[in-house]
Length: 375
Ligand code: Z7Z
Image (cartoon, rainbow, N blue to C red; front, side, top):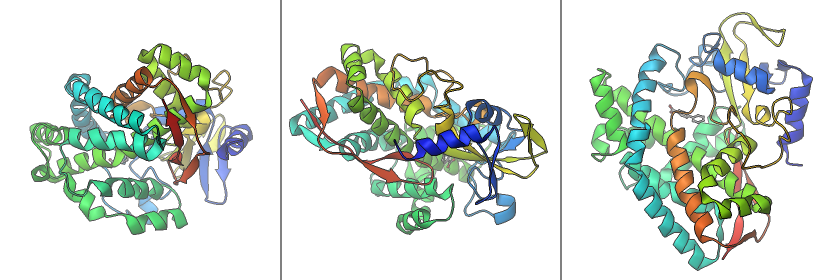
């Protein structure tokens, strides 16, 4: 069985709130309690960090995000700006371009016949459309993925994985990319600046919101696309369903997000004494939410380990829930729809040509390689 799954089952079965003495943190792995923590932002705060470190105890390792690591009312201002910029109306303007790029990429892959489903598809597609949609400069885009790898490692312990990725990341460069003068007119980045200005938010803060898009929008979507391809390769019946009806592309993506949960974990900090499933939670506890475990909780899902693109996936926590639910999810779903529906329309058959290799990160779950052949 896949490595984390027995551990997740043990955590769910151990109780509604579990103490992890090795790290001195609390954890929730059942669907009901993960939802309860996500829903109650007053009791389970993000402002002291959503990684393992408590900002009030350990200090801040860099400027906290104005949206991820904030509570209302500060959070609401940032959220409002980003949700306008990532609204259905704005995303409609990207649609045609996203489908054209998908068509070009699938043509190239059909000509090659064999390729790496991670590097050549799951990474290649977002790298072609996402930085352009933001309007970021051409130079240095190859720094985005090493940076994201470091960032998602930084939410976990300061272990060897984190250290190795930190050595390859360039913080200063990424911080620069959000500035107005670095961005193309008409892109989402510039729209963030314009919306921020209307709310009298200073330009340095607007730049941090653009940074949030760059940090949060690429690696997450990549692992979601990689997970979908991997799921489809392992479930030929579901691949057939998708080929027969490519309009199921979004459903295939959403179900892969539920099943594989590319973002596996996140933390909150308890702001008062409370209970979870009648177990005491102490004020100041760091609470680790196992999103991936909740998304396979048999207390919530029928046949939770089955990839079923006809399933009602509503309510899964792969994009979070509550006030911090992924603000960019419509953008990621548009990328998925464009790429996967085009792929399903044009590819007649596909198979894995070797075993995939896992990629390791303290927060993200995904693959390093996925060798495939298509016709
Ligand atoms: O920089 C940011 O504001 C930021 C926001 C969200 C960075 C990362 C994320 C993020 C974290 C996105 C976990 C998805 C999952």
